[in-house]
Structures are given as structure tokens and as C-alpha cells.
Image 1: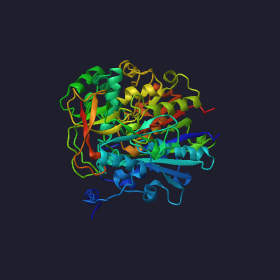
Image 2 (image 1 turned 180 degrees about the horizontal axis):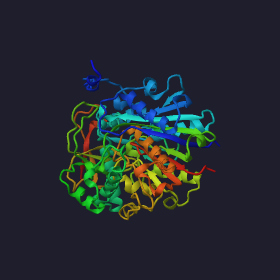
Image 3 (image 1 turned 90 degrees about the vertical axis):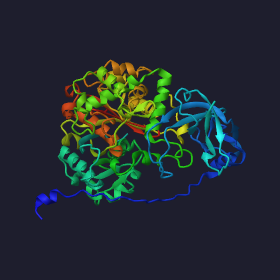
Length: 160
Length: 398
């Protein structure tokens, strides 16, 4: 063992392999109500802050701007139609860390401002046509036939 | 009112795509040893340590614990800070607060990352809400592309405008031996011609419209360390200390869908707070150089408007007029910036360290204004559109 050999050491790395760590995330009362409305009634709801009048989608228990508690009684319906606030057509492939499988590309990711809401729902669009998926375009929610109480009960938003 | 505090030492590793020759602890140690040598201090002189990175990127938590040998934290107070992309600037702010409080005299701030150890897009997605955001998010690339699309929609900016920022960053990186990307082929070609070549290149793959490969930061392995010292010690350690004149940060939302995509409101508010505290009234005239956390090209157009260097929509004009080039009125990112090196947990701390080098007159080939830098601005950016700002100066703050 001379020093030259030590300098030539093979650089190793250890792979984590197929490690997985499943989680069970609590959605909370407000979020659960939203998901149940998707699942049972194909309806989208928001929550209106009595202080600043902002309508948030999804509903949450506190208005961050007013630091005011919001109750389930503050939940109101919003439309299943809206406009594209921002969007992009994703073309590079990557592994979805939630599923462990390649996210199918291309896909369009959009912030949809539903009529009656002040914040956006982030979701997929049904089109990757750059002429159609533009800021300001109108879209409508398309629901899955089988719904489980998950954001993905909205299959995507269809460009109108 | 806290004590006056200055940066007195800075060290960084060479930023590279993969450093398989070192583990995280060894990488951290390289930066720490370099920073101590720069300040001519030993680890015994350091009273406390603040360290940070994106822990889910390496899949190893509690870096404060397991890096103690490399960071120098054995039997010292050490605190870990992680705020996403802003981690490096937040680490710097936290070290500054330690010293300004009067409870610690010399504090070491460390940021590091080994992006080569996992998939960066996947790791970034896990930083977002599992119920509402992860199912559709496309990592940092998509998260930034949407902002670019909005800026183009609002102000008529073009792909050429974006490319002009990328050209500036990569040309500047050629002066910085520590930068990850050295695109030597660009040397000697005028910026306008480089923009044409980049926008017209078929090899320059579209990642998520309007962002191509050339518009994004790389994935980097690297570490940085910055030493903060209190007035009384700082002047003895460094011939020209870089004084902290003001610092501020802002966070603003719960979910991505809440973000105001028209303006970068956090960097705007944090900048406003810093300028008010430091008495800066005309940022473009008064600030001599910037090291801004610009993770993609269009940020170099829009966010300089939000900081207050020009009116909304005028960012492209500043770029094309050469105002932000090395020899311009306000050089931005002489280091080559984030688009030339992005070891995420180190990245924002490198902005602070590089800004300090400019004030101290120690930036070598990337020094601007012949070393005559009175005020240097550093920023951090978090993937959820968070903003950190730190203003450094040659004169002691009032």
C-alpha cells in the first residue's frame, strides 16, 4: 500500500434503493369539507374572510392577511368555471415524488382563478396547445367518474 | 438597537456539478477552513455557528448534529436554519442577529448543498403542500415559468430579453473561478450576438415555456461560510470590514395559488424596509453592485423592478443598455450569479459573501468599480416567492 495507490481510491456512493416512507396527512376540517364537496356533489367551495372579504380556494381556517379565524360557516360556493391566471406547458420529464413514476409530459400546469374566488387552484389543463392555453383563457372543471375525496377528483380543467 | 456588525471573512468551495470525492461534512469543512483562513482566525475564536441547507435534498436531517466535526461546532452553540431557497440569506441574518444582540462576538454562518445526491425537481416538489400542490407541481422550472409567462403577458417582454439576462450571468461567471458553469465559447462574442445564438439554438431544449435550458440555474454541489464580528473586533480582524447596514425578509402566503404573480411582493417589501432603514432614496444611483438570487433569467428583468432600480416594465431596457454589466452603472452578479452556480443551501449565502468581497475590495478578477464600492446589495429567494435582503457597506452604519 503506497500513497499513490491511496490517491487513486475508487469513489463510492451508497444508493438508498427503493426506500419509501408513507405518510398520512391530516387535511383538517375546512379542507375535508372541500374534498367531500368534490367527492359527493362535484361542487367547489371557497371561504370568505368577513374582515377583508377575500375568498380563498381551498378553504382554510385562518385569513393570513387579517390573522382572523374562519369558521365552516364562512364557506361559500364558487363556480367550477374560471380563467387562467398563469400557466406553462411542462416538457421536461421527471419522477413524481408522490407516486415514484414519471410524470407524463408534456402537460399544462395552470393557476385557475375560479369565478367568485380571489386565489387560484393549481391544477392540470386538458390541452397542451400553446394557442389555447393562455393567460386569461376560460376553463371549466372536469370531474372524475370515480371520486375518492382528493384534489384529483377534479380530473383537469378543460379549456373552453 | 443592536450592536454594529460586519462581515470579516468569507470562504467557498469551487462550485461543481458533482463532488463525489467528499461527503457533506467534508464539503462543509472546506468552506469553513477557507473562511477562517480569510479572516486569519481559528475555530477557537468562533463563539457560535448557524448552519443550513435543504435537508430533504440529501435525505439526511439534523445537519447541525451530524456535521459538527466539519463545521467546527463541537462543544459550541449551533443552530440549524432552513427556509428553502432563502436558507443562505436567512443563515446570514440569523448569524447577524446573534452578534447584533451582544450575546456573541464572532459567529460563523454556513450554507451548503449536494444537489448531485438526489433529483432536484422531485426534492423541490416535496417542499410543497402534499394535499393541494404536489399532485400537479412541476418543480422549480414550472414554478418559475408561470411567473415568466405572466411578466411577458403584462409587459410584452420577449425570449430575447430573458436571454440577455442569461448572457450577462454566464459572461460574468467567466471571471469567477469558483463558478460552476464556465461557458468559454461565449468569450469575446458581443451580448447581442450571444442572445441570437442562444434563442436560435435547437439544442437549447424547451423545459417549460418560456424557459429553455439556458434560462435556468444548474444543479450544483458546494458550500460557503461567512464570519460576522461585532464592532470593536471587526476592525481588528479585517482591514476593510463589510458592515451590515440593514436586513429584512418577508414571507407572504399559504398555498402557491395565493401568490401575486404580477409583482414579486416579498422582495419589494423587504427591499423597501432595508432602504428605509439605511436611508437609501435612489437605489440605482446609491448602490454600487448587487449579488441577487436570480434563479432564472426573467427574474433578472422583473425583480430588479420590484427592488426599485427602475419602473415596472423597464427591466429589459436596463439590461440592453448594459447598465447591469460589469462596467455598467449598477453591475449585477459579477460572480455569475445563481444561473452559473446553484448549490441551493449555499446559494443565498454566496450572494452575501460575494457582496462582502466587493465591499472589501477582495473580489479579484470579478471586482467592480476598481474596488470603490460603498454599498452592495445581496438578496435571497425562496421557491415560494419569499424574499430576503441584506445591504452591506464600507462605512460604519449610523
